[in-house]
Image (tube, rainbow, N blue to C red; front, side):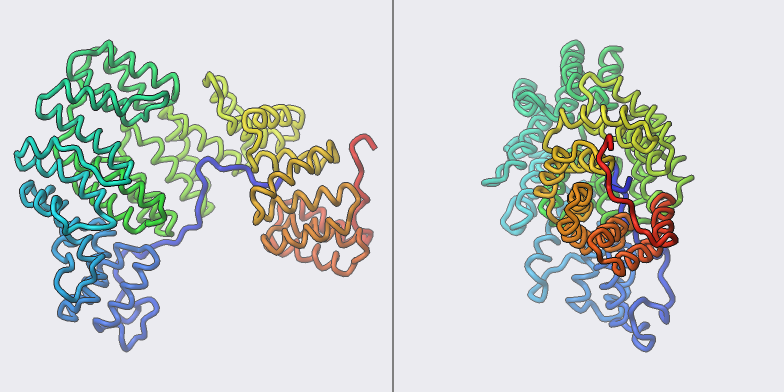
Length: 563
């Protein structure tokens, strides 16, 4: 069945990056005569930067800068490329300044230099750069969160304990209080530290990050029983968390408590919140820059490496993404998730053996998300029985199973022609998530294709289409419902819309051919079926199209269930 199942680790279209600098007469998009000039290097670097290949861009633009005598526009692009590639030392050296530099570049340059100062142990210099007005919008939040850590490194205890604030920025309020908790602990003002830790873990669903922070504080204070209780409560909400499980086991066994973050580690943590905020606000280049700055301060932050990998992969830099995903090492809590992401990158290139090998290694860590990824990859590669078994284990282990587990297992069971079992799972998922468009479409289409419960199924896919009016798959479901109910004019109208949205989908084109035939437009039907054979259909769709073309009789009139 072609109608899309929600992927739990969706693969992306990937574009590889060059591993080495090409010779001067082979720069992409640059005339040969210009390739060995500063201008040619600038063009090549600019193209690489626009395509997300930051490492390559940094090399070209640095060469262009050197050959041009530090011309302002070239230097600014070279700074950006070095920053996005993670060469923070070089970026700090190239930070734009002076009247020729743009104001946005100057502001980012000052932030980069402040981070580099912290990385070099120059807290006083960093604090001076961060606490003034030189670093303005959009970096005020990042500067405010970093400033207390720079003050701590400079030995200015009172300045380090001032809680950062930026009007209207809730993330600064929250993460500023978390940072303040750590800095109170660093200053041995433990009561005030605990007040802050309690505040950031208040509410019904505190984040795993803050639970681990407060639990670590309790362990360091020798209050292991309280830490265990805190971890147990969090595990009730997220029973599959490997980090919470590890923390609970450590506290219960009385092993050494986790160390409080160093200044650099705390500053790196402070950069993650504004990074995530920028990425969510579609300011991806700034978000990536913040992640690179965080990793300059703490290269062991695996969560930041995963975020870098996700960003690079979404932008087409597959080699850069894989390098980021390879950073978490076996035994780390993030290893399973990183291996799962690596697996999807190979699946996207049809390197299924490598993908499944990596996914199995990730699942072997016990990480529920990694096991879910393996089940998704197994289903994508036609290994339905093993996928069903794995999903069954995940459902059995969960006190309150996620609707997506039932959805995924139902989809795999449908592929195995175990419809009654599939239907039960899909209905269980729908009960948990009654308004989910993908689920409404999947179950609705399944009934439509079987000629069952047509009016109910049509209402479901109409609801799905209302939520996603640009989804060719969902509009196809609606068109196929009209076809099954004998309204061929409406079927043609909807299926033509679906083909416009997804012209390369063989199943939608096959459906449109059937609707044309039943509407009396037989030449157009034959054209559609011939087109289906050019679109790499699966075996079932190919056989159906070939049979209709060979017989010249077209499709049989649709029948309702029981007819």
